[in-house]
Length: 99
Image 1 (cartoon, rainbow, N blue to C red):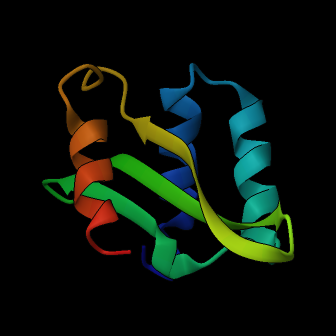
Image 2 (cartoon, rainbow, N blue to C red):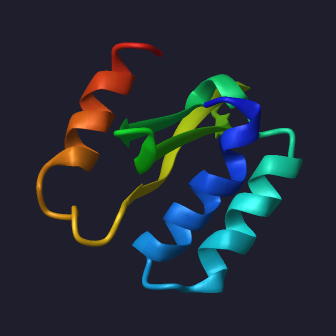
């Protein structure tokens, strides 16, 4: 995701989750945290408009003998009206190959 796409991605995600401000607050908190990596935020566009977003963030897994850096997949958002068409699933499949 490009640096200047964050606001558009955030707006799309809020819309995708029914206008709930909670998802916007979550994205703001992640964006400001150590867990954020811009290279792990992916958008899909159609005609220059962002229609989908997939985010992976870092987390620490407390394994038996060490802490391991893992990726968390969340959130995934698709513009209302385009949900249910497989865009989110396609984005997950495509981005897993990039990790």
